[in-house]
Amino acid sequence: MENGSESKPSVMVTNDDGIDAPGLRSLVRVLVSSNLFNVLVCAPDSEKSAVSHCVSWQHPLSVKKVDISGATAFAVSGTPADCTSIGLSKVLFPFVPDLVVSGINKGSNCGYHIVYSGTVAGAREAFFNGVPSVSLSYEWVAGKSKDDDFVLAAEACMPIITAISTEIKNNTYPQNCFLNIDVPADVANCKVRWTHRVQQLPK
Image (cartoon, rainbow, N blue to C red; front, side, top):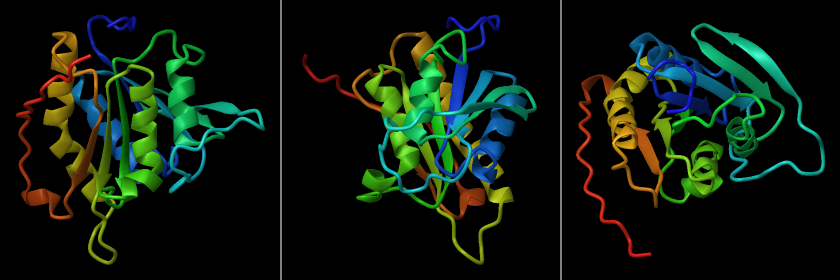
């Protein structure tokens, strides 16, 4: 945990809805308030939904520091995959984060949607670079869901995030996968428990 912040593990947050999206802001707020993590943010400066794993190569990217209480945050004029790549490069942060969390997306990402999802791509790019990652999405229901539900979704996912962090520290987290989690619309009545059983694939 080479993060320069005592013994706290570092978590970098990205998304595809943009750095001002309520899903990301709620997730960051819950992570910061837990006082368990050194929280970093590297996210698109505007909405980049459904861009899949697109990366920028014809035009230079611009980066701007953003004030988010309790976190070190940057907005990037690129895609979620761009943001993850830059965030892991040590250009913005002096260390590689221990975990990348992409989300919380406004809308579910399951089945073939994971092919189109920029949220999932943000986590996948971290996986490609050997960094543990998870993408989070909330099953938004128009006319029923509200922005406060993102806080509940983030709180529901905290047991998973903290469990992953512990396994990373203990070198027991599997290296050949990344996680994609969909939080149901009725998140207030959900309970989450981390009980993974992963069989390592032969090399």
